[in-house]
Length: 495
Image: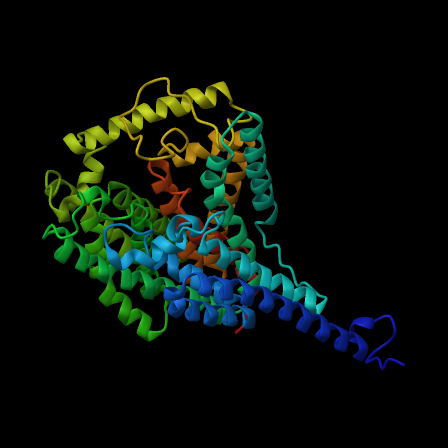
């Protein structure tokens, strides 16, 4: 006869239930470990030279089984630290992480990427642990319905593209990064539970981007300036890196204003000129504009939530900016890059004029396609119209599928409703982050809320003129920020 701890109407507290629950948990975890073991045994036998890497993967998998948030933190740090390959050999781990095993190792029929394995494993372990406990403590988060509706619109985009005769393989590669946002949202919302874990995500942002910034200084001085890298400056960096550098610069400001552990504040002050140098060294106009737009938004938040920071930080910086612009208006060096970004809107040089012209021609094609399919879009895997010719970029396989106007690409592929749901997600997140800056008491939570705010703004500004939302790095960062932000008020008061 079962011994119950309370009344029979509370069977979840019976000894038998707990014993059965433990058996379920062990059985599910054993099955999961067995599957992972079989996969990696096959992998080591097939590629013995990768055994050291495999051992590290084993350790990571064991840690994820122990705590699924380990997988989330690893993904968060990795996207900050590594670009997707390139001429710089230090970025080689990124090439393997973001590319399919078929393209990097020649494994036939395996088009999944290690990043996708990591995200699916993390989500699967969290789900398996809930099933084993017979209690899935699912937290939808305050952005649940906008996120779900956006997910449905993306699925519709896949169906729409296929029915319209689109290329299924292209559709898969074109949309996959956007789906990372969804899975990262749900993993973050359900694994980030304490203030300590939020502090860990902030520390990961600071440290990993700091390490990249240091490598960026080396790359510029030792590889690019000397010609050792062997590529033109346009291909010396991953363009989306400016998002992370701009965000970490503003994170350093936030930690000085709202407070942070002493080591982070000291490290941040030392990192600021390094990250600033690397951002300027990249000479990407989108990075400078994203940083300025995010700082302006942050200044408005300071005006409401922290008047002292507004008057003693935001106002002096804005005054200094008004002096800087006329002084560096025609400067073409590193220090003149922010001024160049503003000047290029009305007085572009030859290089910027060519880039602006390409974007304008591309915008004509995107608008023509949306005008022809305003409600349903064309769907993933379907080319958009080329009513005016563009400079030849046929070396790029998605030349006819992914315009640099990546915000409009969402409308192009998911239709008007998908576009509305996308802006509902990010708009609600921005409003929520600004609200938390005033209402939350814990400094680390306020810092993360505003880190999410400036990060989302940087993503939006960059994606307006470049390929942000098709980048795995950007969408993983965006999904984790959204998921944590969606439950941040529930973390208040927990350790």
